[in-house]
Image (tube, rainbow, N blue to C red; front, side, top):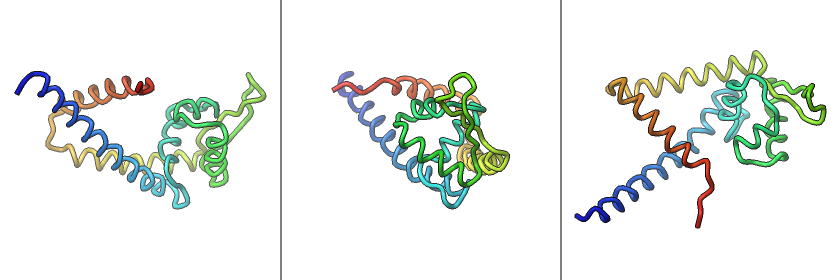
Amino acid sequence: MSDEAAAEEAFLAVEREVALLFRRGRARAADMSRRVHPRLEGVAYSMLGFIEEAGRVRMTDIGLHFGVGKATISRQVKVLEELGLVARELDPLDRRSSLVSLTSEGAMRYLRARGGRMAHFRALMATWETADVAQFADLLQRFNDLTDEPIEA
């Protein structure tokens, strides 16, 4: 097999595996959200994770992180707020903007769901050497860094 054909085969394999990862990830995202609260759907778990990591975050920054508009973020945050999982306050530096943070209930529910997810990852990768897990994380980060850029036609 030529180098060019081998490279093409490798890229096709990456595309296939990434597509499978994304499909499974979307399916599991809704499940993880429901583990936090039965009324949550879709991206809620990821959004709670972003807020948990940030501590307090502007709603506009949530939208930028997830690549969605203000209206979508407002609807999502409203649901989280109604369920008592997040609190919203005016940004003291910009009174037109809101800061969002997890409530103690939201943090407890999110961290419990994440703990279950981490236990699942540990079980899946139990036979992997720590160095392999670290290398996998590094490669995923490198790949994710590349995907920050829009796809050109």
